[in-house]
Image (tube, rainbow, N blue to C red; front, side):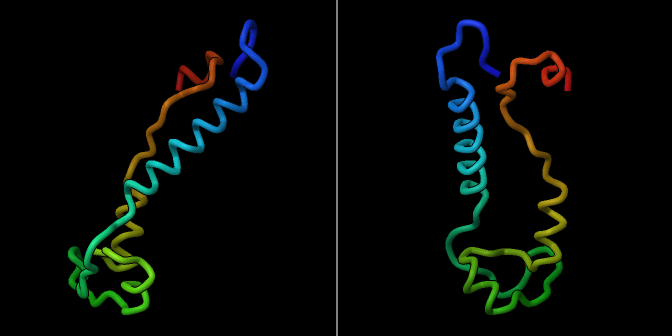
Length: 87
């Protein structure tokens, strides 16, 4: 958090930067290109509606959910408190 000699609005700038970084990271993880008809992990057919809604999809919903759950969220700590730095 901004404090001390920080200018007015510095806290909002930190929040805006965090949101911008999260949106950029999410967009980078979005698939693109040609969708697969069959899941690359389990071989099940990927429904046409899923392929139309999400171009470039490579996995069925179950496999993609498992992959998403296993990915660790990492980010920049923009908070200045000691508690947040110790995590």
